[in-house]
Image 1 (cartoon, rainbow over the protein chains, first blue to last red):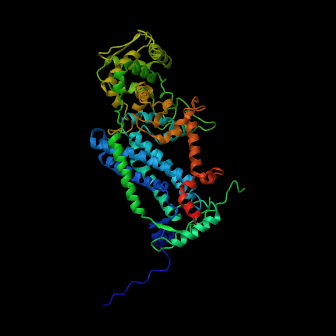
Image 2: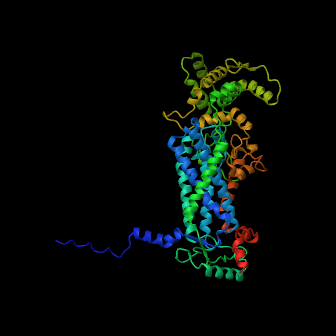
Image 3: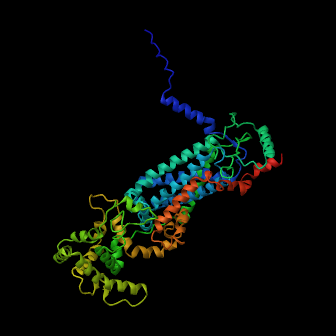
Length: 241
Length: 331
């Protein structure tokens, strides 16, 4: 008795197929994880983007260890205090490298060439990171937490936010700090990185069209495509700023 | 028109590519940042000044505690007159026609007379004199309560004023260092001295810290009431001033010790140092609105005329891409 193969799937595309095709169209693997970068990506300022992600990773790792042991652990053990210190310095480094990254991208006008959403996701990440840190400061269960909470409440109450975001409620602040706001930051950073990969790193200003053309053609002749042989990533998708 | 909406002449890159290992770069960056964080942790640790408690406050500053408790009882403390989200005794701050504090209403109700004083006093067992004093106070008309409160508060205010001005405080108020008991010599205060004495004893025993936590369930996480009670008094302020944390010392962007704190809040803290915010009764809402507007502008920089051209006009980009331009010039 022979087994009859199932009939081929109908031509109409499922949601899954459409999602997959759109994702692959927007970010084919060689564009998502390229093994080459445009030759103009040659400055220390580019380090601060990946340094921001690295600092966020350190924050999440140290914060996860603190969360595993509970909010009081770091007050009465040396190991706990050490991980709290790593967490705190991770946050300081995160904001430092992120601010340098933002200034660098401002002076590059990195929103050019259809990269407006790249700038917006980066800027919103910075703004969401601020309350993420604040909720950490008021969840410390020490004098800093007491003082910062009693001071921060006035600004938040004045604009009505205090009605549903109570900085003197430790339980609420701890929930926001270890789950809700970090998830928001990670999602924003993820969107930011995917947009960067999709649009590519913003090219330099063209200071002289003739020289720029010469530079382009010269460089292209030296290395016309990414080292993996894939075509150069297209750029300038989206509305110009 | 072109000035307001400049042409974006950025063209797709058609030039060369250099080998670049993104994943390796990420792992190296994580290693370097982790190492930096560890080195900073080893060298500088992190601050952890123990929290204050109401027991500590009432033992270290019993007169200040009594003075504040009398205001909580009479409804004249900062918390009692705060308005939303704690009570209806004030409208809260506003800016022009914007009253968001009032509009959002009372979400964390606090009645300082009952929540901070009467309620905790009712938890003290086996004290007939105290029970009688509380009953007498609750049965009295509002005008009588006010007169008792003012009679009791007057010598305490004189004492605090003299202390702040560095003068010899009046002998009408004294604290026994051995027992921590406070004596306020006054007349016409009705049952208030007995009530305040009872509350001071409860606070010094540590009982008031627990009583002020939300008491509807066993597990507690909401410290709004004890924090606001303590914030009305002098202990937190005194500790904060010593640790450069007051508003005029750039406030909450700092933290205890010589740590960087929330340095990214510098612009937020800056407004409180300058007029018209500094002297305004509505400073908090004004500063928050300014920061909200600036945050929106920050996000919208790509669309803001002039600002979005600054990077073109101020050629810092020549430094960033100097290798690229040098290669172009040498061609």
